[in-house]
Amino acid sequence: MLNLSHVAAPMVNQSDLPYRILVRRYNTTLVYTQMLLPDRLLGDQDYLEFHTRGLGGAHDVPVVVQLCGNDPELVVQAARKVVDKVDAIGALSQCVDLNLGCPQDAAKEGHYGGYLLARKDWPVVENIVSALSHSLPVPVSAKLRLCQNAADTPELGARLEAAGASWLTLHARHVSARRRRQGAADLAQVRTLKARVSIPVVSNGNVRTWADVVANRAETGADGVMVGETLLENPCLFADVVPDPVEIALEYLALCRAHPGTATVQTAQTHVRHFIDAQCGRRPWFGQFRAALGRCGTVEEIEQLLRVKVQRWRGLRVLADADDDSEGDPDPGARRQKVMLAGTRTSMHSESVRCVHGSRLGECLRGVRG
Image 1: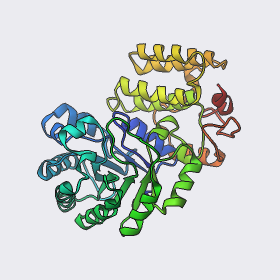
Image 2: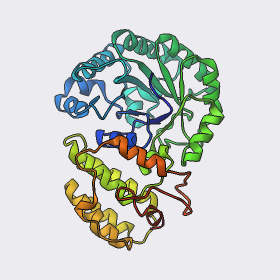
Image 3: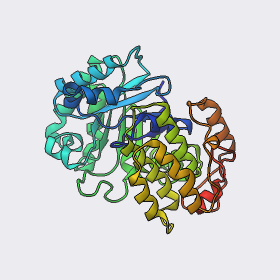
Image 4: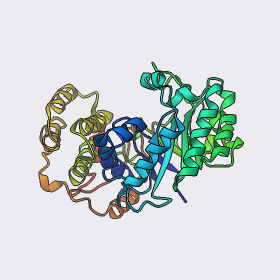
């Protein structure tokens, strides 16, 4: 059985393999790839190779591959391409998800994602889910937003279940190309969907802290909670821990080195910026940091920036290479046990926190303050 309790959302250019491994270490139970384009998977070998490199490997199980599109045949062909690309795939090592929530202009122009939620498009959506579920040896799911008439959403969910979806994820906001998170998510709609279908439902939206995760499940009755941007800021959210921002950034970069060719330098820069911004974004030196980060051309240069300049800006000791013990991808079970033993209820917005101690996530309290 898949564990849907703590799910990392598919994020554009941010759901890379090193990040997926990182969040798994801190109590994330299921991860997604970013939304992949069927025509690129079928017609661009470099695109296919990059996005399937390391997919479903020993450190990436289970993983949900998210696809988009409005052509059942094309989506199924792309899904088969990915499934066939990964050797020895099993029913619980990889899953396929249909994106029915992307609000971007490209999705509007291509008529996919969140722009397939109108009733006139429901037959197409049902055909895609049905074709996927009948053509693949892996579970199929769908991630959707609210229909324009929110009251229609449970009916669509029931039809997706009948078409073969194994679970549904609802981001309980309407589609808006200009404002991706327009207003708060309407969690009552998640509860309504949960009551309508018999398959698991995952709730997405309104999470900034661990307390929000707990409250979300209590309010919605959902089988799990999916988190996107907050997890980018704090990969340890589901472990109820606030890490030292430099230490967690170095851990991520070590995974980039351990799994070469799975994340671009630009992706690594964006992750590191999120980690530092979450706790230090208002510090007077943050602008200097962003400028220096943008000039980095390699993972090693980013590491040096963090170990030396950022530590000095924070008023902390410079970190030598030996201080980082994560290179070589050590036993994640031991690391997770260490975190869970030390983790407590925390808040990204509170300076009164207790955190993980030791070389991996040491000096956490000072990290939150500075």
